[in-house]
Image 1 (cartoon, rainbow, N blue to C red):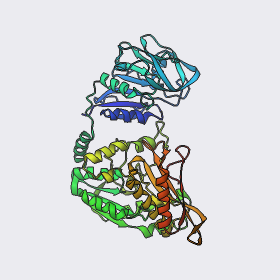
Image 2 (image 1 turned 90 degrees about the horizontal axis):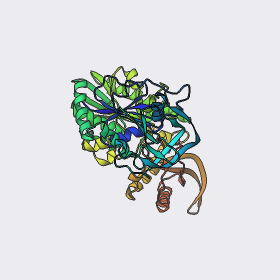
Image 3 (image 1 turned 90 degrees about the vertical axis):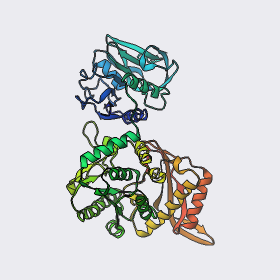
Image 4 (image 1 turned 30 degrees about the horizontal axis):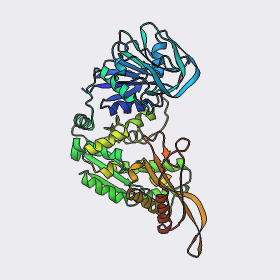
Length: 506
Protein backbone atom coordinates (compact mmCIF):
# COMPACT_ATOMS: atom_id res chain seq x y z
CA UNK A 1 0.00 0.00 0.00
CA UNK A 2 1.45 3.37 -1.07
CA UNK A 3 1.74 5.68 1.94
CA UNK A 4 0.55 9.23 1.33
CA UNK A 5 0.03 12.71 2.67
CA UNK A 6 -3.40 14.28 2.27
CA UNK A 7 -3.55 18.01 1.44
CA UNK A 8 -6.92 19.52 2.35
CA UNK A 9 -7.57 22.28 -0.17
CA UNK A 10 -9.19 25.44 1.20
CA UNK A 11 -8.92 27.20 -2.17
CA UNK A 12 -5.40 28.65 -2.11
CA UNK A 13 -3.66 29.47 -5.39
CA UNK A 14 -0.58 27.66 -4.04
CA UNK A 15 -2.24 24.37 -3.02
CA UNK A 16 -0.91 22.64 -6.14
CA UNK A 17 2.53 23.98 -5.30
CA UNK A 18 2.38 22.31 -1.87
CA UNK A 19 1.64 19.03 -3.65
CA UNK A 20 4.53 19.50 -6.07
CA UNK A 21 6.94 20.20 -3.21
CA UNK A 22 5.88 17.07 -1.32
CA UNK A 23 6.23 14.94 -4.48
CA UNK A 24 9.70 16.47 -5.06
CA UNK A 25 10.64 15.02 -1.66
CA UNK A 26 9.78 11.53 -2.98
CA UNK A 27 6.56 11.29 -1.00
CA UNK A 28 3.20 10.59 -2.61
CA UNK A 29 0.40 13.02 -1.79
CA UNK A 30 -3.13 13.77 -2.92
CA UNK A 31 -5.05 17.05 -2.93
CA UNK A 32 -8.69 16.74 -1.85
CA UNK A 33 -11.40 19.34 -1.10
CA UNK A 34 -11.36 20.67 2.48
CA UNK A 35 -14.49 18.63 3.36
CA UNK A 36 -13.59 15.34 1.63
CA UNK A 37 -11.05 13.77 3.97
CA UNK A 38 -10.72 10.02 3.23
CA UNK A 39 -11.54 8.62 6.66
CA UNK A 40 -10.66 4.95 6.94
CA UNK A 41 -7.83 5.10 4.40
CA UNK A 42 -4.98 3.40 6.24
CA UNK A 43 -2.39 4.67 3.76
CA UNK A 44 -2.77 8.27 5.03
CA UNK A 45 0.17 9.17 7.28
CA UNK A 46 -0.19 12.93 7.62
CA UNK A 47 -2.39 15.92 6.74
CA UNK A 48 -1.64 19.43 5.46
CA UNK A 49 -4.23 22.22 5.66
CA UNK A 50 -3.74 24.70 2.80
CA UNK A 51 -4.16 28.44 2.59
CA UNK A 52 -7.38 30.10 1.42
CA UNK A 53 -8.66 33.31 -0.17
CA UNK A 54 -11.09 33.61 2.76
CA UNK A 55 -10.68 35.01 6.26
CA UNK A 56 -11.65 32.59 9.03
CA UNK A 57 -14.01 35.34 10.20
CA UNK A 58 -15.95 35.38 6.90
CA UNK A 59 -19.44 33.93 7.11
CA UNK A 60 -18.87 31.85 3.96
CA UNK A 61 -15.35 30.68 4.86
CA UNK A 62 -14.67 26.93 4.70
CA UNK A 63 -14.92 25.58 8.26
CA UNK A 64 -14.92 21.77 8.34
CA UNK A 65 -14.92 19.66 11.50
CA UNK A 66 -11.30 18.53 11.86
CA UNK A 67 -11.60 17.15 15.39
CA UNK A 68 -11.20 13.55 14.15
CA UNK A 69 -8.07 14.49 12.17
CA UNK A 70 -6.24 16.28 14.97
CA UNK A 71 -4.58 13.79 17.27
CA UNK A 72 -5.10 10.94 14.79
CA UNK A 73 -2.48 12.17 12.29
CA UNK A 74 0.41 14.61 12.25
CA UNK A 75 -1.06 17.88 10.95
CA UNK A 76 0.59 20.95 9.37
CA UNK A 77 -1.52 24.09 8.96
CA UNK A 78 -0.30 26.64 6.40
CA UNK A 79 -1.48 30.28 6.52
CA UNK A 80 -5.32 29.95 6.59
CA UNK A 81 -4.80 26.39 7.84
CA UNK A 82 -2.80 27.76 10.79
CA UNK A 83 -5.38 30.44 11.49
CA UNK A 84 -8.27 27.98 11.29
CA UNK A 85 -6.61 25.55 13.72
CA UNK A 86 -6.28 28.39 16.25
CA UNK A 87 -9.72 29.89 15.53
CA UNK A 88 -11.56 26.55 15.79
CA UNK A 89 -9.96 25.93 19.20
CA UNK A 90 -11.02 29.27 20.69
CA UNK A 91 -8.12 31.48 19.67
CA UNK A 92 -8.42 34.94 18.14
CA UNK A 93 -7.72 35.82 14.52
CA UNK A 94 -8.10 39.51 13.68
CA UNK A 95 -7.30 41.97 10.94
CA UNK A 96 -3.62 42.89 11.10
CA UNK A 97 -2.54 46.49 11.60
CA UNK A 98 -1.13 46.20 8.11
CA UNK A 99 -1.60 43.51 5.50
CA UNK A 100 1.35 41.15 5.83
CA UNK A 101 2.66 40.40 2.34
CA UNK A 102 6.12 39.64 1.01
CA UNK A 103 9.47 38.79 2.51
CA UNK A 104 10.08 38.54 6.24
CA UNK A 105 12.76 36.90 8.36
CA UNK A 106 12.37 34.58 11.34
CA UNK A 107 13.64 36.50 14.35
CA UNK A 108 13.34 33.71 16.92
CA UNK A 109 13.04 29.93 16.56
CA UNK A 110 12.52 27.21 19.16
CA UNK A 111 15.48 24.99 18.29
CA UNK A 112 13.88 22.04 20.10
CA UNK A 113 10.86 22.01 17.76
CA UNK A 114 11.11 19.11 15.30
CA UNK A 115 9.48 21.24 12.59
CA UNK A 116 12.48 23.63 12.67
CA UNK A 117 15.25 21.05 12.81
CA UNK A 118 18.22 22.50 10.93
CA UNK A 119 16.56 25.91 10.35
CA UNK A 120 18.13 28.93 11.99
CA UNK A 121 16.99 32.43 12.94
CA UNK A 122 17.27 34.86 10.05
CA UNK A 123 15.72 32.42 7.57
CA UNK A 124 13.63 34.25 4.96
CA UNK A 125 9.91 33.41 4.73
CA UNK A 126 7.06 34.61 2.49
CA UNK A 127 3.99 36.15 4.11
CA UNK A 128 0.63 36.52 2.35
CA UNK A 129 -2.24 37.25 4.70
CA UNK A 130 -4.45 40.11 5.85
CA UNK A 131 -5.47 38.52 9.16
CA UNK A 132 -3.14 37.51 11.96
CA UNK A 133 -3.40 35.31 15.05
CA UNK A 134 -3.61 37.65 18.05
CA UNK A 135 -4.32 35.07 20.76
CA UNK A 136 -3.51 31.36 20.89
CA UNK A 137 -5.68 28.86 22.78
CA UNK A 138 -4.35 26.92 25.78
CA UNK A 139 -1.79 24.20 24.95
CA UNK A 140 -0.72 26.15 21.83
CA UNK A 141 2.95 27.16 21.96
CA UNK A 142 4.77 29.68 19.76
CA UNK A 143 7.84 28.17 18.09
CA UNK A 144 8.83 30.94 15.65
CA UNK A 145 8.34 34.71 15.27
CA UNK A 146 9.28 37.50 12.88
CA UNK A 147 9.76 41.21 13.58
CA UNK A 148 6.08 41.93 12.87
CA UNK A 149 4.36 38.56 13.41
CA UNK A 150 4.67 37.12 16.91
CA UNK A 151 2.91 33.87 15.94
CA UNK A 152 4.85 32.96 12.79
CA UNK A 153 4.63 29.29 13.81
CA UNK A 154 3.24 27.22 16.68
CA UNK A 155 2.63 23.67 17.86
CA UNK A 156 -0.14 22.13 19.92
CA UNK A 157 1.21 20.38 22.98
CA UNK A 158 0.03 16.81 23.45
CA UNK A 159 -0.45 16.15 19.71
CA UNK A 160 1.60 16.24 16.52
CA UNK A 161 -0.08 19.38 15.21
CA UNK A 162 2.04 22.16 13.79
CA UNK A 163 1.27 25.40 11.97
CA UNK A 164 3.00 28.26 10.17
CA UNK A 165 1.49 31.63 9.30
CA UNK A 166 3.55 31.89 6.12
CA UNK A 167 4.00 29.88 2.89
CA UNK A 168 6.89 27.38 3.04
CA UNK A 169 5.92 25.99 -0.38
CA UNK A 170 6.90 29.13 -2.33
CA UNK A 171 10.37 29.77 -3.70
CA UNK A 172 10.92 32.89 -1.56
CA UNK A 173 10.74 30.89 1.70
CA UNK A 174 14.39 29.82 1.59
CA UNK A 175 14.07 26.96 4.08
CA UNK A 176 10.53 26.03 3.07
CA UNK A 177 11.51 22.69 1.52
CA UNK A 178 13.51 21.89 4.65
CA UNK A 179 10.47 22.61 6.83
CA UNK A 180 8.19 20.44 4.68
CA UNK A 181 10.81 17.69 4.82
CA UNK A 182 10.88 17.97 8.62
CA UNK A 183 7.11 17.53 8.67
CA UNK A 184 7.44 14.41 6.52
CA UNK A 185 9.99 13.11 9.06
CA UNK A 186 7.47 13.76 11.82
CA UNK A 187 5.01 11.68 9.75
CA UNK A 188 7.68 8.93 9.46
CA UNK A 189 7.36 8.87 5.67
CA UNK A 190 9.64 6.45 3.81
CA UNK A 191 10.46 8.80 0.89
CA UNK A 192 10.21 5.91 -1.57
CA UNK A 193 7.86 7.35 -4.20
CA UNK A 194 9.63 7.68 -7.57
CA UNK A 195 8.93 7.39 -11.33
CA UNK A 196 10.10 3.76 -11.22
CA UNK A 197 7.80 2.87 -8.32
CA UNK A 198 4.91 4.68 -10.01
CA UNK A 199 5.43 2.65 -13.21
CA UNK A 200 5.54 -0.69 -11.36
CA UNK A 201 2.42 0.11 -9.33
CA UNK A 202 0.47 1.60 -12.24
CA UNK A 203 1.21 -1.24 -14.70
CA UNK A 204 0.11 -3.79 -12.08
CA UNK A 205 -3.09 -1.81 -11.42
CA UNK A 206 -3.82 -1.48 -15.15
CA UNK A 207 -3.42 -5.23 -15.69
CA UNK A 208 -5.89 -5.88 -12.89
CA UNK A 209 -8.32 -3.14 -13.98
CA UNK A 210 -8.37 -3.99 -17.71
CA UNK A 211 -7.75 -7.74 -17.83
CA UNK A 212 -8.22 -8.86 -21.45
CA UNK A 213 -10.36 -5.84 -22.38
CA UNK A 214 -9.48 -3.66 -25.38
CA UNK A 215 -8.65 0.04 -25.08
CA UNK A 216 -8.65 2.87 -27.64
CA UNK A 217 -6.57 6.00 -27.08
CA UNK A 218 -6.41 9.31 -28.96
CA UNK A 219 -2.82 10.39 -29.50
CA UNK A 220 -1.89 14.05 -29.97
CA UNK A 221 1.86 13.72 -30.34
CA UNK A 222 2.24 15.47 -26.98
CA UNK A 223 3.87 14.22 -23.79
CA UNK A 224 0.76 13.26 -21.81
CA UNK A 225 -0.96 11.08 -24.41
CA UNK A 226 2.35 9.51 -25.46
CA UNK A 227 3.33 8.48 -21.92
CA UNK A 228 -0.23 7.20 -21.37
CA UNK A 229 0.10 5.06 -24.50
CA UNK A 230 3.43 3.54 -23.42
CA UNK A 231 2.11 2.72 -19.94
CA UNK A 232 -1.01 1.08 -21.37
CA UNK A 233 1.07 -0.75 -23.95
CA UNK A 234 3.30 -2.13 -21.21
CA UNK A 235 0.23 -3.37 -19.35
CA UNK A 236 -2.00 -4.75 -22.15
CA UNK A 237 0.13 -4.78 -25.33
CA UNK A 238 -1.83 -5.57 -28.51
CA UNK A 239 -5.16 -4.85 -26.78
CA UNK A 240 -4.36 -1.13 -27.07
CA UNK A 241 -5.20 0.70 -30.32
CA UNK A 242 -4.08 4.33 -30.73
CA UNK A 243 -5.58 6.86 -33.15
CA UNK A 244 -3.63 9.90 -34.34
CA UNK A 245 -5.77 12.40 -36.25
CA UNK A 246 -4.21 14.97 -38.59
CA UNK A 247 -6.67 17.87 -38.52
CA UNK A 248 -4.45 19.89 -40.83
CA UNK A 249 -3.40 22.21 -38.00
CA UNK A 250 -0.31 20.36 -36.80
CA UNK A 251 3.22 21.69 -37.08
CA UNK A 252 5.16 21.14 -40.31
CA UNK A 253 5.73 17.42 -40.99
CA UNK A 254 4.47 16.59 -37.50
CA UNK A 255 2.05 13.88 -38.63
CA UNK A 256 4.79 11.88 -40.36
CA UNK A 257 7.44 12.54 -37.68
CA UNK A 258 5.22 11.56 -34.75
CA UNK A 259 4.10 8.35 -36.46
CA UNK A 260 7.79 7.41 -36.82
CA UNK A 261 8.32 8.09 -33.11
CA UNK A 262 5.40 5.84 -32.23
CA UNK A 263 6.85 3.04 -34.38
CA UNK A 264 9.97 3.19 -32.20
CA UNK A 265 7.75 2.76 -29.14
CA UNK A 266 6.12 -0.38 -30.56
CA UNK A 267 2.62 1.10 -30.47
CA UNK A 268 -0.31 0.00 -32.63
CA UNK A 269 -1.26 3.34 -34.23
CA UNK A 270 -3.87 4.25 -36.83
CA UNK A 271 -3.05 7.53 -38.61
CA UNK A 272 -6.02 9.44 -40.05
CA UNK A 273 -5.60 12.25 -42.61
CA UNK A 274 -8.64 14.48 -42.05
CA UNK A 275 -7.22 17.82 -43.20
CA UNK A 276 -9.78 18.55 -45.90
CA UNK A 277 -12.67 17.74 -43.57
CA UNK A 278 -11.48 20.26 -40.98
CA UNK A 279 -10.60 22.99 -43.49
CA UNK A 280 -14.11 22.76 -44.94
CA UNK A 281 -15.75 22.98 -41.50
CA UNK A 282 -13.59 25.98 -40.52
CA UNK A 283 -14.02 27.96 -43.76
CA UNK A 284 -14.87 31.59 -42.99
CA UNK A 285 -14.96 31.13 -39.19
CA UNK A 286 -13.09 33.85 -37.24
CA UNK A 287 -14.41 33.61 -33.67
CA UNK A 288 -11.79 31.83 -31.48
CA UNK A 289 -14.28 29.93 -29.33
CA UNK A 290 -16.25 28.80 -32.38
CA UNK A 291 -13.02 27.57 -33.99
CA UNK A 292 -12.19 25.59 -30.86
CA UNK A 293 -15.64 24.01 -30.81
CA UNK A 294 -15.53 23.07 -34.50
CA UNK A 295 -12.08 21.51 -34.11
CA UNK A 296 -13.10 19.71 -30.92
CA UNK A 297 -16.32 18.33 -32.44
CA UNK A 298 -14.53 17.33 -35.63
CA UNK A 299 -11.89 15.46 -33.68
CA UNK A 300 -14.53 13.60 -31.65
CA UNK A 301 -16.46 12.67 -34.81
CA UNK A 302 -13.36 11.33 -36.59
CA UNK A 303 -12.19 9.47 -33.51
CA UNK A 304 -15.66 7.97 -32.97
CA UNK A 305 -15.80 6.79 -36.58
CA UNK A 306 -12.43 5.06 -36.23
CA UNK A 307 -13.50 3.47 -32.94
CA UNK A 308 -16.60 1.97 -34.58
CA UNK A 309 -14.39 0.25 -37.15
CA UNK A 310 -12.81 -1.74 -34.31
CA UNK A 311 -14.39 -4.62 -32.42
CA UNK A 312 -15.05 -5.12 -28.72
CA UNK A 313 -13.56 -1.83 -27.49
CA UNK A 314 -14.59 -1.33 -23.86
CA UNK A 315 -12.27 1.39 -22.57
CA UNK A 316 -11.18 4.86 -23.60
CA UNK A 317 -7.66 5.83 -22.54
CA UNK A 318 -6.96 9.50 -21.84
CA UNK A 319 -3.85 11.47 -20.91
CA UNK A 320 -5.56 13.44 -18.14
CA UNK A 321 -3.05 14.79 -15.62
CA UNK A 322 -3.53 16.08 -12.07
CA UNK A 323 -3.82 19.83 -12.82
CA UNK A 324 -6.63 18.99 -15.30
CA UNK A 325 -8.55 17.28 -12.50
CA UNK A 326 -7.90 20.00 -9.92
CA UNK A 327 -8.65 22.95 -12.21
CA UNK A 328 -11.72 21.47 -13.86
CA UNK A 329 -13.66 21.21 -10.63
CA UNK A 330 -13.11 23.70 -7.85
CA UNK A 331 -13.59 22.85 -4.17
CA UNK A 332 -17.08 24.36 -4.32
CA UNK A 333 -18.07 22.16 -7.25
CA UNK A 334 -18.04 25.10 -9.67
CA UNK A 335 -16.33 24.39 -13.00
CA UNK A 336 -13.44 26.82 -13.42
CA UNK A 337 -12.10 25.66 -16.74
CA UNK A 338 -13.07 23.05 -19.30
CA UNK A 339 -10.36 20.60 -20.34
CA UNK A 340 -10.65 18.33 -23.37
CA UNK A 341 -9.26 15.48 -21.27
CA UNK A 342 -11.87 15.61 -18.52
CA UNK A 343 -15.04 14.67 -20.32
CA UNK A 344 -16.90 14.69 -23.62
CA UNK A 345 -15.64 11.58 -25.37
CA UNK A 346 -16.69 8.91 -22.83
CA UNK A 347 -20.35 9.97 -22.76
CA UNK A 348 -20.63 10.01 -26.56
CA UNK A 349 -18.83 6.73 -27.06
CA UNK A 350 -20.33 4.77 -24.16
CA UNK A 351 -16.91 3.58 -23.01
CA UNK A 352 -15.36 3.25 -19.59
CA UNK A 353 -12.52 5.63 -18.85
CA UNK A 354 -8.93 4.75 -17.92
CA UNK A 355 -6.55 7.59 -16.97
CA UNK A 356 -3.21 6.26 -15.70
CA UNK A 357 -1.64 9.73 -15.31
CA UNK A 358 -4.54 11.41 -13.54
CA UNK A 359 -2.57 11.90 -10.30
CA UNK A 360 0.68 13.19 -11.87
CA UNK A 361 1.92 16.73 -12.45
CA UNK A 362 3.46 17.59 -15.85
CA UNK A 363 7.09 17.40 -14.67
CA UNK A 364 6.36 13.99 -13.13
CA UNK A 365 4.89 12.78 -16.43
CA UNK A 366 8.15 13.71 -18.14
CA UNK A 367 10.22 11.84 -15.53
CA UNK A 368 7.99 8.77 -15.94
CA UNK A 369 8.41 8.96 -19.73
CA UNK A 370 12.19 9.01 -19.45
CA UNK A 371 12.07 6.10 -16.99
CA UNK A 372 10.00 4.20 -19.57
CA UNK A 373 12.83 4.62 -22.07
CA UNK A 374 11.07 7.12 -24.34
CA UNK A 375 13.22 9.36 -26.55
CA UNK A 376 14.10 12.65 -24.90
CA UNK A 377 12.93 14.83 -27.82
CA UNK A 378 9.43 13.36 -27.46
CA UNK A 379 9.40 13.87 -23.67
CA UNK A 380 10.84 17.40 -23.65
CA UNK A 381 8.49 18.75 -26.33
CA UNK A 382 6.84 22.05 -25.59
CA UNK A 383 3.11 21.96 -24.86
CA UNK A 384 1.04 22.35 -28.02
CA UNK A 385 -2.67 23.30 -27.95
CA UNK A 386 -5.28 20.72 -28.91
CA UNK A 387 -6.73 23.02 -31.61
CA UNK A 388 -3.17 23.35 -32.90
CA UNK A 389 -2.41 26.14 -35.35
CA UNK A 390 -6.14 26.85 -35.49
CA UNK A 391 -5.68 29.22 -32.54
CA UNK A 392 -2.34 30.52 -33.80
CA UNK A 393 -3.91 31.80 -37.01
CA UNK A 394 -5.92 34.83 -35.95
CA UNK A 395 -9.02 35.21 -38.09
CA UNK A 396 -10.24 32.69 -40.63
CA UNK A 397 -8.26 29.57 -41.50
CA UNK A 398 -7.20 28.59 -45.01
CA UNK A 399 -4.69 25.98 -46.24
CA UNK A 400 -2.52 28.85 -47.54
CA UNK A 401 -2.37 30.47 -44.09
CA UNK A 402 -1.60 27.13 -42.49
CA UNK A 403 1.35 26.68 -44.83
CA UNK A 404 2.69 30.15 -43.99
CA UNK A 405 2.58 29.64 -40.23
CA UNK A 406 3.90 26.07 -40.46
CA UNK A 407 6.96 27.29 -42.34
CA UNK A 408 7.54 30.25 -40.01
CA UNK A 409 7.07 28.11 -36.90
CA UNK A 410 9.39 25.42 -38.28
CA UNK A 411 12.20 27.95 -38.73
CA UNK A 412 11.61 29.38 -35.23
CA UNK A 413 11.59 26.02 -33.40
CA UNK A 414 14.58 24.65 -35.33
CA UNK A 415 16.61 27.76 -34.52
CA UNK A 416 15.65 27.57 -30.82
CA UNK A 417 17.12 24.06 -30.84
CA UNK A 418 20.17 25.11 -32.86
CA UNK A 419 20.99 27.91 -30.41
CA UNK A 420 20.43 25.71 -27.33
CA UNK A 421 17.40 27.77 -26.25
CA UNK A 422 14.59 25.23 -26.77
CA UNK A 423 14.84 23.68 -23.30
CA UNK A 424 15.23 27.11 -21.71
CA UNK A 425 11.63 28.06 -22.48
CA UNK A 426 8.35 26.42 -21.46
CA UNK A 427 6.54 27.00 -24.73
CA UNK A 428 7.21 28.76 -28.01
CA UNK A 429 5.41 29.22 -31.29
CA UNK A 430 4.66 31.54 -34.18
CA UNK A 431 1.33 33.31 -34.61
CA UNK A 432 -0.07 34.60 -37.91
CA UNK A 433 -1.69 37.98 -37.31
CA UNK A 434 -4.61 39.32 -39.37
CA UNK A 435 -2.43 42.30 -40.24
CA UNK A 436 -0.75 43.21 -43.51
CA UNK A 437 1.81 45.93 -43.77
CA UNK A 438 3.95 47.69 -46.34
CA UNK A 439 7.50 46.46 -46.91
CA UNK A 440 10.31 46.67 -49.41
CA UNK A 441 11.99 43.56 -50.82
CA UNK A 442 14.61 44.30 -53.45
CA UNK A 443 13.30 47.21 -55.46
CA UNK A 444 9.67 46.17 -55.03
CA UNK A 445 7.06 47.39 -52.62
CA UNK A 446 5.27 44.58 -50.74
CA UNK A 447 2.05 44.42 -48.78
CA UNK A 448 2.16 41.15 -46.86
CA UNK A 449 1.55 39.33 -43.59
CA UNK A 450 2.90 39.83 -40.06
CA UNK A 451 4.12 36.96 -37.89
CA UNK A 452 4.40 37.28 -34.10
CA UNK A 453 6.86 35.11 -32.18
CA UNK A 454 5.89 33.95 -28.67
CA UNK A 455 8.13 32.30 -26.07
CA UNK A 456 7.45 32.04 -22.34
CA UNK A 457 9.16 30.70 -19.24
CA UNK A 458 7.02 28.94 -16.63
CA UNK A 459 6.93 26.11 -14.09
CA UNK A 460 3.37 24.93 -14.66
CA UNK A 461 1.65 27.39 -17.07
CA UNK A 462 -0.46 28.85 -14.25
CA UNK A 463 1.69 31.98 -14.60
CA UNK A 464 4.28 32.72 -17.28
CA UNK A 465 6.84 35.39 -18.11
CA UNK A 466 7.94 36.28 -21.61
CA UNK A 467 11.29 34.70 -22.42
CA UNK A 468 14.13 37.20 -22.68
CA UNK A 469 15.65 35.69 -25.81
CA UNK A 470 18.89 37.25 -27.11
CA UNK A 471 18.43 40.12 -29.56
CA UNK A 472 20.95 38.54 -31.93
CA UNK A 473 18.90 35.33 -32.02
CA UNK A 474 15.62 37.17 -32.62
CA UNK A 475 17.22 39.19 -35.41
CA UNK A 476 18.41 36.04 -37.18
CA UNK A 477 15.03 34.30 -36.79
CA UNK A 478 13.24 37.35 -38.18
CA UNK A 479 15.63 37.51 -41.11
CA UNK A 480 15.22 33.78 -41.87
CA UNK A 481 11.42 33.93 -41.77
CA UNK A 482 11.15 37.04 -43.94
CA UNK A 483 13.62 35.69 -46.50
CA UNK A 484 12.31 32.13 -46.68
CA UNK A 485 8.56 32.25 -45.96
CA UNK A 486 6.63 33.57 -48.90
CA UNK A 487 3.89 35.99 -47.83
CA UNK A 488 5.62 37.40 -44.71
CA UNK A 489 7.44 40.76 -44.63
CA UNK A 490 7.34 41.63 -40.91
CA UNK A 491 8.13 39.74 -37.66
CA UNK A 492 7.35 41.01 -34.13
CA UNK A 493 8.08 39.55 -30.67
CA UNK A 494 5.44 39.28 -27.92
CA UNK A 495 6.69 40.63 -24.56
CA UNK A 496 3.47 40.09 -22.56
CA UNK A 497 3.38 38.01 -19.37
CA UNK A 498 0.56 35.83 -17.98
CA UNK A 499 -1.31 37.45 -16.32
CA UNK A 500 -2.57 39.77 -17.76
CA UNK A 501 -2.08 38.11 -21.16
CA UNK A 502 -2.42 34.36 -21.84
CA UNK A 503 0.24 32.11 -23.36
CA UNK A 504 -1.76 31.55 -26.55
CA UNK A 505 -3.35 34.46 -28.40
CA UNK A 506 -6.77 32.81 -28.81
